[in-house]
Length: 98
Image 1 (cartoon, rainbow, N blue to C red):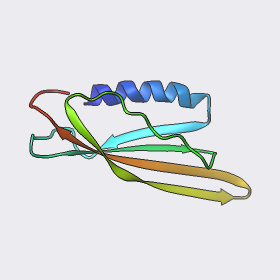
Image 2 (cartoon, rainbow, N blue to C red; image 1 turned 180 degrees about the vertical axis):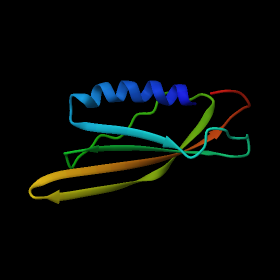
Image 3 (cartoon, rainbow, N blue to C red; image 1 turned 90 degrees about the horizontal axis):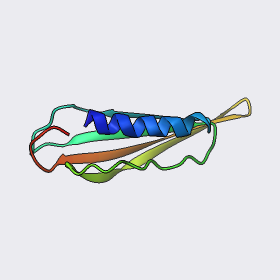
């Protein structure tokens, strides 16, 4: 799974570099059994109030479910900063490396 997330983030960071938007992702665990799940959090931050939603790469080894989002906007001395965190639940479909 690290490889898929890394490839997705590298492409996203190349796009974000020219827009003033930052993207980060994290998972709550790196090893998971078939009867467990991984929580993926993708955070997008920038100096705009309207930030784009993430587009995840194809992950055929997992069933992917959206678990919601949270947003924060602040105005300090006339400067805007905002962030949106999207949470996804990844459920493994079969045994193996992803």
